[in-house]
Length: 385
Image (cartoon, rainbow, N blue to C red; front, top):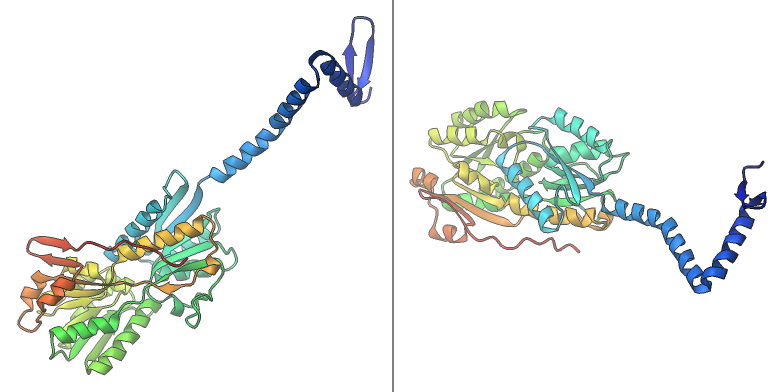
């Protein structure tokens, strides 16, 4: 007996019928008993039963949460605020961890080798997109991702155009098609002009920075330019680790700087408390491009609010995660200027540093003897449609 013939038993005789014969007999029998309308309904139901598993499978695939890796470089206030903003932006856009996205968060804790290992692990996994915070992590993922070409959104990056990751300064739309993000080039020149306004006699400013950080190199170049214009001597001490920041700060104080500037260097950021307290003990103020630093004692700061930047990047990332091609989104600078003041530090340095009342009116963050006062923030929008 062949495989396509099945036994049909009747009271008179055992016979064998082929599949086509069985289908014909079944159809004739149904027509006799139920009529053509009923048969058509049954046929349609059968088709739905056959196709429904496929439909259910497709629906299931469309509702599987997208896997998103978020990689931070270090646990420092600036980057932590940026990551908190990123999460707020994703949530505002309707992407909720554990519901329609599955987030896995990493932190290299300020170690470049660790950042490279994390980058390699992530791009070789089954994640749907990678979000990076800081220039060192941008570079680590960009290098590891050259072949995998995972969707990559970056943020909290001072100068992506100078980071050698394929983002062109001449044309912000010219970048790898699987990558986009925000640049956050800080208002270094404006900050130094504020310093000169507060202290017209200012002649010597120190800076500690890590030359292996392209973001810090970009900021330092801007500082050199404005210092030349303002006839301020910029004294530089370089470091290769956060543990060296204390000695570097003491070296600057030994050269009788009148102030120390910090421009967003991640290595320095990990030791900014040490720098500010050491300089304060010597009677020297610190001013920075990270508004959050006034909470740690900086005299004043002018720069992007990193929570705001992170939130805008979260909104941008949501667009990409939902299917918009990163290839069509230019890499623009997003660094809305925010002035922050520490009035407690101002009292310590008021003999040489005079900060007018108009500064406080412009400030979005003020630290005084009563605590921290924050002005109302404007709504965050990513308008690059």
